[in-house]
Length: 169
Image (tube, rainbow, N blue to C red; front, side):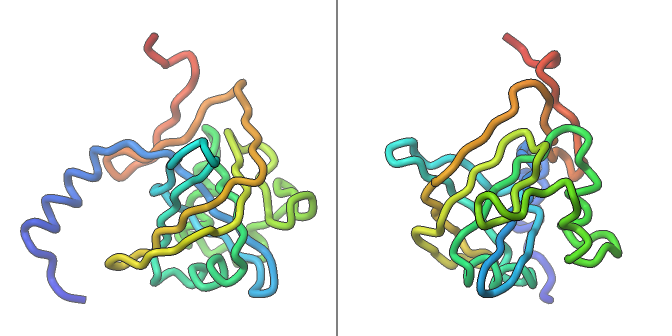
């Protein structure tokens, strides 16, 4: 790997100050079951409902997600840091064991985290490779949100819990 340029280092430092939701993108299908932690996911439009999800091409889950063509974006709730670490590959938990009874593996054809802050299930409508990542445009098929809990965000290279009681009106 080559050394980072000054601009790349500055960009990384700046992006560490950009709060982002922590998500586990999960899939199942002919290419297998997989999941990966991502922070680059957002809405594109509600007409038609579409999300943007960025996947690192170096991840071993990348080809499985894109090959299956369907996925769930599981927005992690506060207290789900362990899941984020497992699916980031930062623990020794094997992939098959990451999908335990906290997951609904049958209802939507892709794994859905039962107690996520929100879940968006959809099919990959378009892909664009750029740099080290693939940008996916996901056509939304199903949405579920829990309004009674907090969320997990990533800021300054650490996880933080955000609760409804901490919101500023």
